[in-house]
Image (cartoon, rainbow, N blue to C red):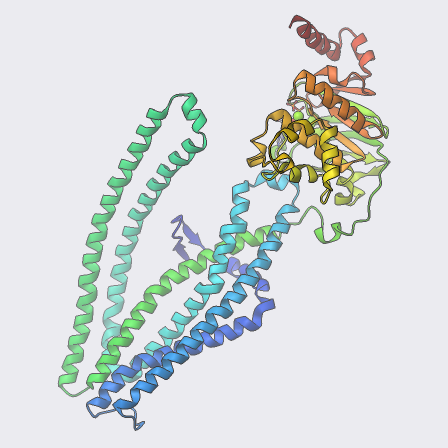
Amino acid sequence: MALRNKKSDQPIKVKKESLKKSIQIFRYIRPYMGYFVLGMFFLVLGSLIFMALMGLPGEMANIAIGSPKFNLGLKVYDFWWIFLTILLLQGLFSYARTYLFAVVSEKGMADLRKDLYQKIITQPVAFFEEKRVGELTSRITTDVEQLQAAFSVTLAEFIRQIVILIAGIFIIFIWTPRLSTIMLLTFPAIVISAMVFGRFIKKLSRQRQDELARTNTIVEETFQSFTIVKSFANELYETIRYGKSVDRIVKVSLDFAKMRGIFFTFIITILFGGIFFILWQGALMLEKGQMEAGDLFSFIMYTGILGGAIASLGTLATQLLTAVGATEKILEILNTPSEFDINQSGHAEDLKIKGDIDYKNIRFAYPTRKDTNVLNDISIHLDAGKKVALVGQSGAGKSTIVQLLMKFYTPDSGEITIDGTNINDFNITAYRKNIGIVPQEIILFGGTIRENISYGKPGASDEEIIEAAKQSNSWEFISSFPEGLDTIVGDRGMKLSGGQRQRIAIARAILKDPKILILDEATSSLDAESEKLVQDALDKLMANRTSIIIAHRLATIRDVDWIYVLENGQIVEQGSHHELTEDENGVYASLARLQFDSANHI
Ligand SMILES: Nc1ncnc2c1ncn2[C@@H]1O[C@H](COP(=O)(O)OP(=O)(O)OP(=O)(O)O)[C@@H](O)[C@H]1O
Ligand SMILES: [Mg+2]
C-alpha cells in the first residue's frame, strides 16, 4: 500500500510485516481492553442507529402519502417521539464511546510515553551520538501524539465509516434496487476520474509545501543565528533572499490555485452531472409508479452519506498508515536494548570502591568513526588516593580516556579495572555513583542554580548546597545575584559566564563526594586569581580521592603524583613534573618551556 502523508507528502510505504509488527503496540492498549471493547460496542451500535435515523424521513413521507413501506401501523404524528428517542440514544452512545476511547488512548499512550522515555534515557552514549536529539524528541512527542489520535479518533472513525458503508449499501440495495444498480454503474467512473485529477493537484500542492518549507528555513536559521547575521552585516542580503523566496511561493501558489479552480469546476460538473442523472432516472421511475417518493428521498439521503463515508475513508486510511509508520519508529526504540535495567538500578546495593585504577593496553575507536583509532595501547596505573594528570595536544585522546572510565563507551581491546575488578563487572549505576566529573564542556540545566548544584546529590539541603558553593568559590557570585540560589541560569546555563558555569559544575562534583574525581580542563575558563582560589578548593577536594586531571596549563598540575603525556592516542612520556622537565628533549619539557616563557613575556 502506498498513500501520501499529508505533512511531508512523502509516500508512506507500509509493508505487510510492518503492519504485523505494529500490532505489538496493542500491548499498551491491553490493560484497558475492557474500555476499548465497550467503546467499540457503542460505536457500532451508534452507527447502526444513525443509519436507521437517516431512513426515517423517507418512510415518514411514504406514510404521509399513504403508502408506507413497512407495515408498522405508525402515523406521521408518531414520528416526533421516534426521532427524539433515536436522537437521544445516538447522543448517549456517541458520548460514551468518545469518553471510553479517550480513556484507552490517554492512559495507554501515557504508559507508552513513560516506557519510551525510560528506554531512551537508559541508552548508552553511543546511541545519542547516532541519533539526533530532535529525532528522539519527535519520537516521544509527535509520533506518540499520532498514535494517540489514531486510538482516540481515527481508528474509531474508520470503523464507523466502514459500518456506515456496509449498512448503507445494504439498505439502498434492498430498498431501491434498480436505482442503486444505476448508481453503481455511474459512480466508479466519477470517482476514478476525480482521483486521477486529484493526484496531479497533489503534486502542485507538494511543490508549494516545499517552497514554504524553504522559506521557513531561512526565517529559522537567521533568527536563531541573528548574531552572525548582524556581525557580518548581512541584514539586507537576508531580506532580499527571504523576499525572493516569498515571491516564489506566490508564483507556485497561483499555479496551484489555477489548477484547483479547474479541478473544482470539473468535479462539480461531473459530480452533479452524475447526481442529476440518477435523480432524473429516479424521477422517471417515480412517474411510472415503479418507486415511492419517500424511497427516492431516502435513496438521496443514503447516497449522500455513502459518498461522505467513501471520501473520509481515504483520509482516515492515510492517517492510520501514518500512525503505523510512527508505531514502527517507536517500536524500533522500544526494542533496542538498554545500557542497564533501570528497574534494578534502584536496588543496586551501594558499591564502595577504594579507587585503584588500571588501564591495561586499551585500544579504542569511536563507534561512529570505527576506522580511526583514537587510543593506541594505553596503559595507565593509579593508586587509590593519588593524583594523575593527562597532558597533550588537542585531539590527543585525553577526554576519551576519561569517558572510557565513565563507561560511556567500551574499549575495543584491553581492560580497565578498579581495585582489580573489570569495570564491566560492576552494576553500572552503582559504579558511576563513585565517579565525579567536571567535564570540559559544561552544560547546565535551564533551571535554578540550586537545581544545578543539587544534581550532584538529589535532595541535598540548602546548607550542603551553600557549603559546596563556598568550597568551589562560587558562593561569592551566587550571593551577589538578587535571587541567589534561585537564579535561573537560562538555556544550558547561557546566562552565566564560562567561569561561573565551571564553578557550578565543581560545586556539583563536590556535593556528589565521589571516590574518583575527574577534572577535564576544570579551571580553563577562570582568570588567574579565581583559578588560584578554585585550585585551592580542588586541592582540598582531591585529598583522599583518586583524581585524574586533564590540563593544558601545566602550572596547574605541578603537584600531581604522576603525569602522562599523550600524542595521537599514545603515551609518549610519563613521570613526575620534576622528572619530565629534566629531560630537555622531551615533549613535556618543551611544552613547559613554551608556556613558562610566554608567561614571562607578558
Ligand atoms: N564522540 C566522538 N565521536 C567520534 N570521534 C570523536 C568523538 N569525540 C572525540 N572524537 C575524536 O577523538 C579524538 C580524541 O578526542 P578527545 O576529545 O579525546 O581529545 P582531547 O585530547 O580531549 O582534546 P582537547 O584537548 O581538545 O579536549 C579526536 O580526534 C576527536 O575528533
Ligand atoms: Mg578534551
